[in-house]
Amino acid sequence: MTEIVAAAEYVCREKVNVYDGPHSLSVATQASAGRHLQVLAVQTEAIAIRLCEDEYPGWVKRQDLSLLEPAQVCYQPVSRSPAEIQQRLPQAIQYAKQAMQVPNQYVWGGTVPPNYDCSGLMQAAFAAAGIWIPRDAYQQEAFCETIGWENARPGDLVFFSDGDRIDHVGLYLGEGSYIHSSSPKHGNDGIAINRLQETANVVERYYYQRWHSMGRVAHSYQPLNCEKKSIKQPPP
Image (cartoon, rainbow, N blue to C red; front, side, top):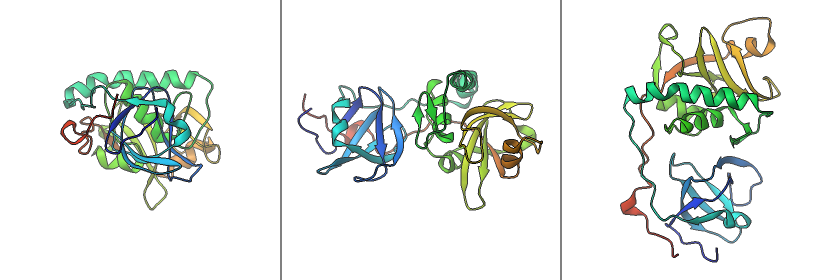
């Protein structure tokens, strides 16, 4: 690729790391093969982008531009009814359980296999079921319908808080269990199933004490910025 065009749309040919600044070494998220992005600005060392499916902003390093190709068709979001989403939730649960069976560890910004952070695993699991949710845990909590614990069912999201804002999320499996990717500091250093109760298990006790709420995904994310009418095609 010899030229990157601002406002044009591209597709990831393979996994692309998205950073939180033009000079940063910290990965904010990852884009799997097939994801669409829109170029916002072009700088010497990196390009500012917005991922189309969830509108997540970030930076792609210039050395990774070979991983992108011009989009032949602009991204078009798919609307899902609440009933459709409920039918697809077993696929999301199965994805998370299968990801747990592969050797993995917690990686900040991880959104592609085998290593995930907490919200990255949730987004990947729902995307595998054809449902898009926002990227970060606090965004996912705001996106969901809040439900009472007594009404929770498999496929709902379990949110945890540090007291200031939501900073951890898991996928509820029913009967008090949830699957999540947690860090080595207070968690399992990877994907595991835990119970939402104060047990002798130090991980379960830690997260039970920080439990905040339950949320239900009722629709698939509909981006506002990556609309076909507002995006120009890059040169072939």
